Image 1: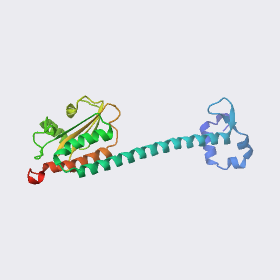
Image 2: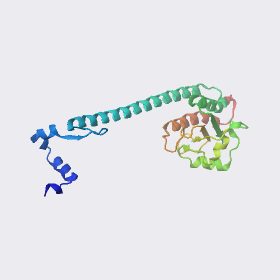
Image 3: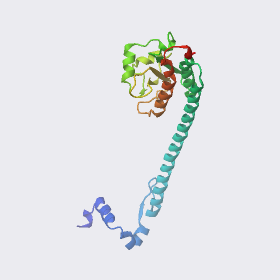
Image 4: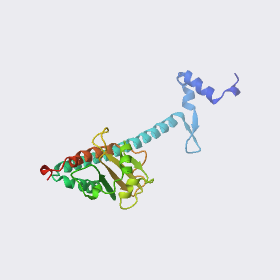
Amino acid sequence: MSADSFSAEDVALFLQDNPSFFRDHAHVFAELRVPHPNETRAISLGERQIMTLRARTKDLEWKLSGLLQNATGNERISHTLTDWCCRLLAEDDYRQIPGHIVRSLSDMFDLPSIALRLWDVPRLQDSEFTEDVTDAIREYARALTKPYCGPLAGQEPAGWLGTPPASLAIIALRTDNNTEPMGLLVLGSDDPEHFSVDMGTVFLDTINRLASASLSRLRLPPGPEAA
């Protein structure tokens, strides 16, 4: 094979197959010059390796910073949900729970519009929280096995909100995955990216479990103990 027939791939394969080459020819390694990635001058191979390692280190620092930021945000949300759970547990008047859920979620997560609708709740009759519940809404809730997150996209429950949101989350309220839903919780945002299609739903699932557990008190038959 002549020198002219060597390709870049041939050279790369030769160096991979002969890791001792630069040890046996140390002068080649020391004198080898390669183009600078951002300038027109040439630099040594060792300097080029150092630049590559620095770039990788900087990239890892950015990734670590992002992970720390996400962890801090998740911790803050976790504490917020814990405080919310404590408030729900401390509420003695079951009739105040639906309104408390709407107001507290709006305050905690700075959401401009939240709607809650319930059905099959004997302890909550003739309430704003039981209005405008159609058969289509109930069927929609049954089919909603995980929270919907994304654009308005003609979602009927969004009509309960005061103004059309740029993005929204819809949660079917049920105590576990195998029970019939008892309602829908709709969270609206002015930010089109706030509730995105590809976002995680861990905290929304937690909201569902806490809200459903508290609201399940409304499913008990009315009686003296309900006061």
